[in-house]
Amino acid sequence: MSKKTDYFQTFRKISQAFATAATEDELLELVVQSAIDTLDGKAACLYLADERKDLFVAKAQRGLSKNYLHTSPIKAQKLVKALVKEGHLAFEDALQDPRLENHEAKAKEGIASILTVPVRVRDQTIGVVSLYTAKKRKFSKAEIEFLDALADQGGVAIEKTRLLERIQSNALLFLDLASAINSTLDIKEVLHTLTVKVSESLGMKGAALRLLDEDSGSLKLVASHGLSESFLGVGRHTSIETSAAALRGETLVIEDAAGDKRVRYKDELATEGIASMIITPISARDEIIGTLRLYSPVKRQYPEDMIIMVKALAHQGGLAIQNASMFLKLQAEQKALEEDVWSHRSWF
Image (cartoon, rainbow, N blue to C red; front, side, top):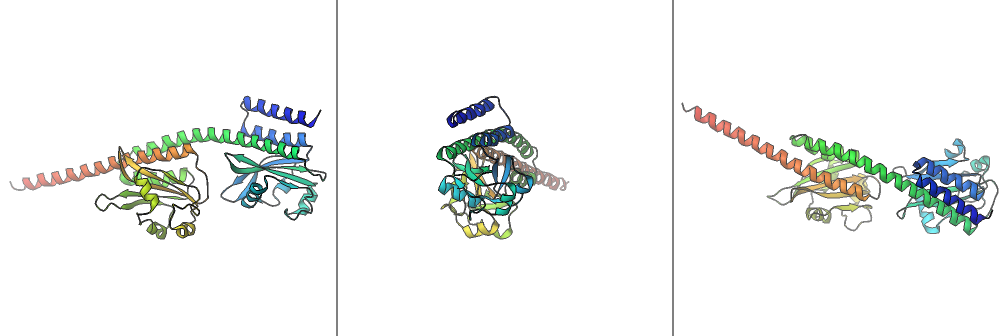
């Protein structure tokens, strides 16, 4: 059987697995096993990036010992940068190549050569697939292209599973948070949910909620979570572009705060440990009454479904704030009326 036929049979098998709705783990294990079988490898592993730790973590593997996998974590940023530049990384002599570390561990594991390609989802490298061979070899163009295509299949499986998980998770999360926001007329509880609960539920570092002062036209901080007082002091400046855009009804997604021209006070953001953020307006009916800022400690891409949910929660929060404010106003008016009636009674 020719190599081309092997490649075709491998992709036919994977396509059938997708059609039968296999789980993500099953699909990824099929990817690594297919790499070994078709490319005559000793082992293969699919690693996924852990953004918070800047590491690649083994997600599915065949043929590697636990000791080897825990020998030395793979630094994500360094590897991704090299892959973006080269497209793939081939280590013909894994025991001598200066780009690699832990040569002794590789020798003990029986590894001679390594081929590594990126796992991509929507042009973002989220992981890598590495093929390990027992004999030293130079990888052909066809072998590199095949492993690259296999890695893309792994990316499709991951994206499909993550999308379904996010849809289910977001639906439950929105129901839970929207119910919490609208279940009380206590303004403090509403603000707590919009900052603390929304921030923690979405895995963010912190949040800041500011409401528009109609008299001064400025944004006043009314609630925050996970942010220092010094950083919140910077936010008192309301003329910055991101705040102005939010007050026009725009939702801004800043994936890289350090490199985005719309962002001022970059040094303060870096000191606070903030790498990306979402700024969305808080509206009540057709009126914008404030802004909600969510901050992340890592640079990240925010899926559209997550942005839609943040916007919807901010709108729900706006209505709840307005309702709670009206309730407080009614309570004050009732108290004033009662006091007025009591003063009249004192005349008799």
